[in-house]
Image (cartoon, rainbow, N blue to C red; front, side, top):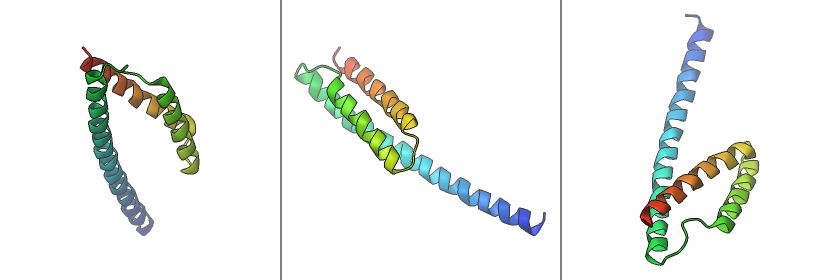
Length: 98
């Protein structure tokens, strides 16, 4: 291996380790988020509230799109990501109401 290749391999390894740490943060953050939404779902079920709150969901998507723009992340990707999460939350809430 040349010196340049060795440096490139080390940089690649550093980037991958950083990505792995960020992936772990994402997983644990999502787990905590779902713990909170499960509590919301139980509360909704106990009080006969609907599983879905379209007004809040729209506000959340708008908020996340704005955050994505501020973070230089593709807002369309952020919207799709949050829409997927919201769909999962609603599915969980509907299960709790049965």
